[in-house]
Length: 198
Image 1 (cartoon, rainbow, N blue to C red):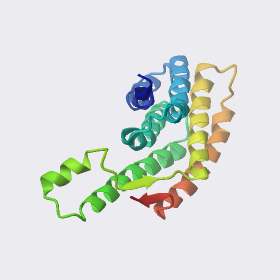
Image 2 (image 1 turned 180 degrees about the horizontal axis):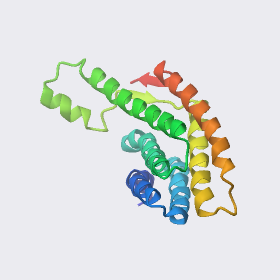
Image 3 (image 1 turned 135 degrees about the vertical axis):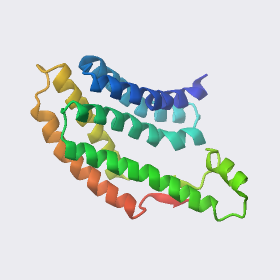
């Protein structure tokens, strides 16, 4: 049971992100604020439980960073549609994450294509998460960027759901920090920093 918990937590972000994004676009502020905080916390918990119960898996290592991007991107787009966050910052975050996912898929295809497998075998390997080609080691800046994005999204949701607690100027100020860390960390990945061939 415990060995499956980290993957369940990761899957909750993958599935819950789009749902929260939809609810955010509909203006369900308090529900989305609470939901986002809970799902964002699973990013810490899945890693902790994976180490605690020695339950690291290829699936988890592959989809954990993707789940983060799905959660942040989905809710970010929902906030953008409501006019609650800066379009520039939202576009930068979504563009960077889309670039990372597309680049990772391209690198995977290129690495697998070096073999002499036929197309059928290549396709099976491409979609088999147990076949690893590269390992992404997040830099300190990338971790700071993810944390800043989560705080930014939380503040933007909270400013709408709990206006007495969080002022609208808070997400605006945090947006500047997120834009800076997003651009700099994105340039790091363009230079293939932290990407290791297996």
